[in-house]
Each structure stands twice: as structure tokens, then as C-alpha cells.
Image (cartoon, rainbow, N blue to C red; front, side, top):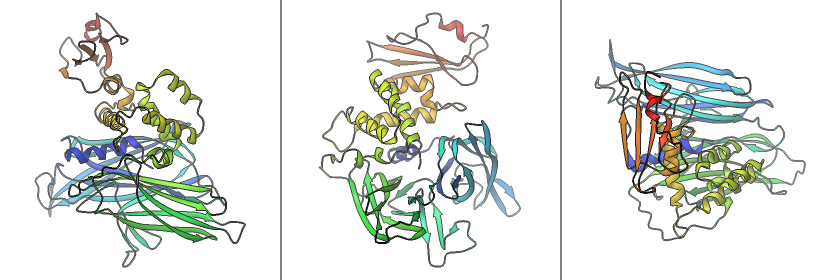
Length: 460
């Protein structure tokens, strides 16, 4: 399941439909499947659009070349489980910076033992390393329990072929050819969302018992917009579940696909979910419905993993009260953390009459911005001083940049005109590694150092 903040960068695409010129058009996703009692089989999917890449001449035309570097580090042992480069090449029709090259989609897989890992994926143009994109995440790998029914991660796909599936295809598995969609984006030009999942160990002691597989699609307001279910007999060790969703009548929004495998007798369930985004300007969302008061179960938090709950709160604690921070520290179950986050954002909804939580959406936009612009080394943008200030106070009214000079290290000044009659924040790259520290501010409660210029002087 993808972390919320990384997926949000695609959501911003809906409103801008543009890319920074130094951001490689590279998308990355993964899904976990059952392997054994100590490990999972993890598939990694990528999609590379060669637009803006530098094409090099070859005998038969021109070619673009990208390097994808993947690091997966075991946090407990501080050792690399994966540390490898992949080279991706594509012949282009025209030599103008790869403008006419098709996107390249691929997959590779590993058996990953149980544990907690950091994942870093960096893709860059082999001829222009500035054109790059880096993705950082933390993963918790938990094997699927033996003899206990469960559901794999959901893999989103751009197409699934049953008839005429090519057994030699890179994407062939379980008699299907599953073409991944790592971007998690669908549009009016490709409005069909395909999905693939696996159901495990549907074996019960009671021969008369059975399962219900429930498929639900929620919009970003937590309202169910599609529901379907079917009965499944018990006794199967593994079953492939795949299908499609025709989105052509849905408006532009983020959606959450939820698969619930429910044991009919005990009503116990195993839930797997995947978020995706649909861009459809042809359909106007004219609904006047107020947000459905579906509670926690109808919200995106209902399917958050433990690590997603922790990440969400860590990114949001700058706006939390101390008693909320203390309360979250006492929670040790995923259910308790889900409920906390649901109430945390519900209590901050600036306009409960609308389907959207405008306050939450704005804050999540800020998270996406700081992670994209202020991430340094292994520190995500929200963990930096600039990220904290941006998340707490929003976008500054003015931002002045001062590059490094002979006697001065680089620094920048942010101005907020509507806070306390006008305040400023001064950040400096004291260490020279791109980590801009907060040196001085006249905002009450912030760091104040009237001699801040001494810290950016190259003489000190």
C-alpha cells in the first residue's frame, strides 16, 4: 500500500497538469504477495517517460538512457538488502530530447524477509543527472500468516489480458498478462482501472462456512460510489482476484479501492486497499450532497497501516496540541491510531457542510510541497526547519534567496505579512550540505538570534 504523501504528488497533477523541468517523468509502485512464513514476494513496478531526456546518437537513430538506483535497507541491522542499479534504454523516433519516445514500463521482484526497511529509489537521465526523481519510503514487511485467510496488496494495472496472454511477457503471472500502472493515475482517455490481487488460505474447519469478497470504491470525501460482492466457497489455498472499474462517469477525484475478504460465520475480515486518481474534466461534480457521516469505516484512515498512521501524525504534529501528542504516544494498536487520526482531522474541518475537508486538503498540499522541495539526503522535507515553518504557517508572502558568496554561505528570508503585524524567518545553509537551519525569526516562540549573520559568515 502506498504511503499517503507520496501518492499526493500525483493528486497535485490534477490541478496543475505540469511538471518541474528538473523532475524526471518517473513513477514507481510496489505490491506484496505471499511467499512463506518468514518472507513476502515483493514486486516493484516502474514507468519512465523519456520526455526532456537527452537522446544520444546510435547507428539506427537515437536513444535515451536512464539509471534507476534502488536501495532497500534493513533498519534493525543497518545493512543493505538491495543496493543495485538498473539501466533503462529506449530508441526514440526523433532526436529532440526524446520527445517522441514511448513510456517504458517494467517490473522486477525480490523475496524480502520480515522486518522494517527504508526504501530509496532514484532515477535519473544518464546524460543529464540533474533531470532526476527520488522517492523515499519506510516499509514494514510482515509475512502472511499460514492457515489464516488473507489478501495480498492490490496491484493497479493499465490492462490485464486473459485471452492471448503472452507467457513470455515480463508481466505474465497466473495465466494473466498484468500491465502495471505505477503512476496510479487514470484519465478520460484511459478511464478503465484494472486491478489484480490474490486471496490466500480460505480453508475453515466448518465445511458449511464460506466467504464474501466485498469490493468498495470510496471517493475522497469517504462516500462509497461503487459496491459489489460475491460469495466464495472455502477450501482454496490460493485464488487470483482481478477485474476492472469503468470510471468514465466519475468526476476528477482521488478514489480508494477496498477489497474485504469476510468469513461469513465469524464476520472476521481481512482488508486490502489501494488509492488511485482519476482525471476527468468532462464530468462536473455537481452533487449537493453533504459529506456522508460514515464515520471511521468510510474514511481513508480505515485502511491505514500502522506505519501509515505514524507517518501521517509525524507530518501533522506541528499543528497538534500537546495533549494530542501525548495521547498519540499512548496508542499501540492500529485501530486506536486510525480512530485518533479520523477525529484529529474531523475536529479541524473548517467547513463541515462541504463534502471536502478543506483544512486537511490544504495541509496535505503543504506536505507534498515540502517533501518535494526541501528533502535532503535521508531527511524528508517535513522533517526540516523550512518544512516545519511551511507546514505551520503556510506559504510565505515573499521569499528572498541569497546564494553563496566569497564570505557568506547561502541563506534565504521568508516574510509573512499577516502574522503578528509582519514576521520573517531566516534560514542558512551553515554546514554547506543543503540543510537550511532556522537562524533567526521575530515570530514569538521561534528562534531569535540577532547575530545570525555571524553563523553564515565563511570566516566562522
